[in-house]
Image 1 (cartoon, helix red, strand yellow):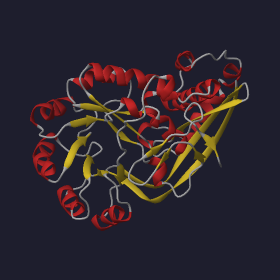
Image 2: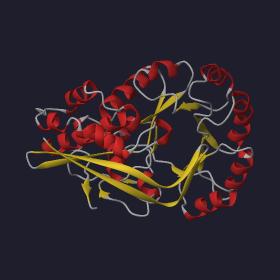
Image 3: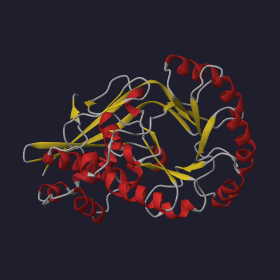
Length: 337
């Protein structure tokens, strides 16, 4: 296979804030794998929380370029095993695994959801994320982007005031993501008030390793709690089943579609709700997530909607959340920049 790597700085329409950081752009790596005249594309973004940079990913992948070139590509899961054996970070593996899946589908001229035997006639609507900012700015974001479901980023000493104010501007469902900023006592106290304000669930309110606190929430929170930072790789799913009502899978963190498919299956077998989230990817990464939609209960795939300019075509998300799937194979991705 022929390998190509290209880095991008994706500019955001507005500053995006969470409890631990804010940013105006997102660095991203696009990996391309070409075989028999077809090219598959994958993506992984940088992430300071996990110590991931685009130059670091490029160095890792370039270290096995010759072996990728000589790899006898048959199907993505075997290629994924090869990448794991080479000791790459999950973010680097994700970029290559997504490219391999896109390539695999294009070689067969079938979308991935069709290869997996799933039906796209019914799928969850993506939420639209309102990054943490001043109350005025967060309210302005809602006014300028009417949407049926919002994920609200919190993590301040006035979180309830934020939600009360935002509720004035929309009847949409709310999902709350505190990105590890709350305590167990704070979460238990906030949950009934947030439920009255139309909140559907809470995402990762406590620090990732606060299992004792999460056990308290499992028994005392009136709102379901979804794991994010506590659920990174496949081995985390079983542990989360004892403390959370569901999991949010990030392709970059777990290493791509190959492990994500197994995580979805395991979580469902354990009675958990399943969500897949994004990391402010372009349409390259979002199109890969969209292939999983028929298997999900919730999804957060608004990354490309937050950009001033996209770098690819593929799956489209229309106003209100309708998803348009291209009929091309794989994830249906083509680069435009």
